[in-house]
Image (cartoon, rainbow over all chains, first blue to last red; front, side):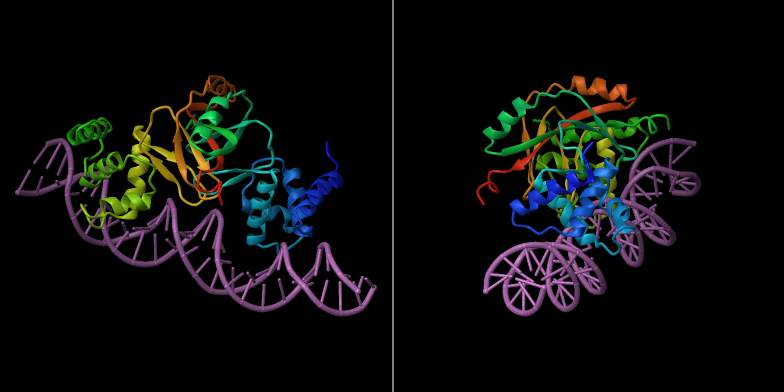
Length: 143
Length: 143
DNA sequence: TCCTTATTCTAACACGGTTGTTATAATCTC
DNA sequence: GAGATTATAACAACCGTGTTAGAATAAGGA
């Protein structure tokens, strides 16, 4: 388990390296994401930090999430309705329920190397491959 | 190449089989999707049918797209901003540009069977797997 | 041709996210 | 440290996508 300090330090170095500023909002949002450790919407994240730092604005949350995505510490999971954000950036994939929209992680080796080669043949620069399995989650398949 | 009539007939049988009505809007939207034969937004589709049948409303377009998805003749491609709809339902995957949002098809064999088995272990009923490769398209990588 | 009711249209609305603009505060320079 | 510089934050107003409610229309069956 990483310490809170270590989580801060990682972000601080990444920001310094890009000449960007270290702000309480960025540190706090980063900590909250690691603590929650699950898929969250921008709104949920804003609510999660509201008790520690009131009045963190929606534009700040959105901008910071995109910043973290650029830093490579966060993944956007596009979804009809609202996007989710996934603090796990290691190799894993997603089950998306077509009825309720729930997103669940799934571990499975998927060889995407052929797809990466095909992408490059299209003169596209791939940075990651994400398998999305749609279907019905355990709750929705019953109803 | 399928004839226009054949395209209509397929939809008509699918609708009849479900006890649903055959309407000019449904036939026209279906034809327009096959003619365009590329990823389109709901708005683009509405514009494409506007000359042949004016006043086709947004709710009708959205409802019909979801109907076709249920019929299995169309795929939704979730994307930040607006979803796209893909008239190809055979096995293929997508390149999504993280800068401009463009979506491109890519042919590549991807073995998702391990992921399907993993999904079932989660008591999830998978119906399809979709690989999304994010990165920069040929236009955006230059700038 | 009439009846039933699914489907459509119109209008207003909700949500997710973004864009100015001004105010604040993190960092730099001395 | 103190002051200057400039990125970043907050607020408010806005935009686009998609949805809902309800009345009007028309498809399919008797």
